[in-house]
Amino acid sequence: MLIDYLISKDGLRLDQVDLAVTGIRLGRGPGGFVAETAQQVEGSMRVLLSDLSAAVARPEVVDLLVAGIPGIARPEINFANDPDGGIRIVGSVEAMGRRIPITAHTRVRVSESRLVVSPMRIRGLPLIGSLPMQLPDLELPLALPLGLRFTEVTTEPGSLLLRFEGQDVQFREREAEATPEV
Image 1 (cartoon, rainbow, N blue to C red):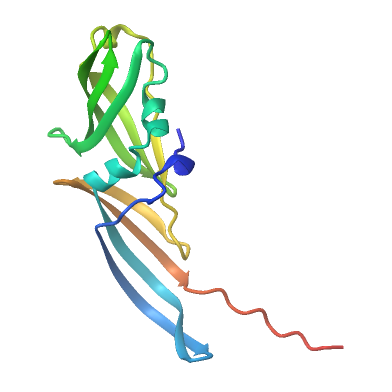
Image 2: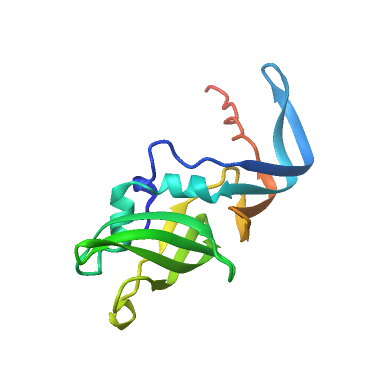
């Protein structure tokens, strides 16, 4: 499930960005020299799980997570570290007239320019294991500028760390070559 149009209007906050750039070529600009290209760019972005939770906390997104489960309503979720690695979706849903806590263990990966959170197993709802269903993946678009690409995602206490890189990176589009008037 692609949720780019459902992300909070406030977007997704990045806690920290680290960047290493080598082989920068400067060109002439109207105000002096400006960076045009780099041979190599490597970096990482740290996303706090609390910020990720806030970005997808809209009811439209959360409701899609449990859309295929009959009798489930009003989910409330947050992301937390999973002791087995990855992240967990923790929260509660309304079912059978009461609030029931749930936990979903996930696998987190990057695919092209998307952060993909795949729920692997869910616990907390009675008989949930007997239902023939597949919970949808959450896909957050995280397009990088300048032709960079994501290489991996890892978890740290309270956060996700997304690494990226690029070679022969263009920092700005080259201005169109002036064509002689005829």
